[in-house]
Image 1 (cartoon, helix red, strand yellow):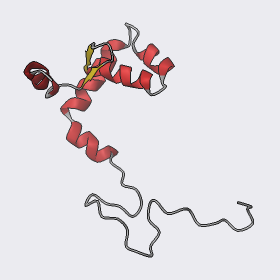
Image 2 (image 1 turned 60 degrees about the vertical axis):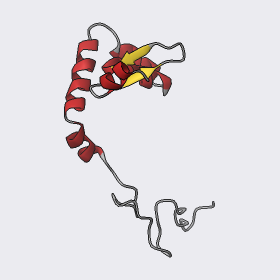
Image 3 (image 1 turned 180 degrees about the vertical axis):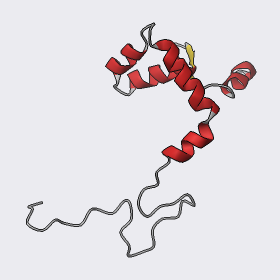
Length: 105
């Protein structure tokens, strides 16, 4: 990573593709959406009428990332922000669900 790219990453998310292309901010989000399989949504949001709104949404989230992260954070059952696993003998996030009576497994 070059020093210039390092400094730019402080202000916006960047994606470097396999071909070496650097994509930043809202366009990086659209690229990630495409790679995760949300191709139709990414193509629609990448159209000229919608692209300014994607960049605006990215800018708002980036400027308020701590507040947004606090609202969006959901800890699995039995785990908390301290990262401690559930106590032994309790049903934690990774335990299989209890069997349902009358339903074949």
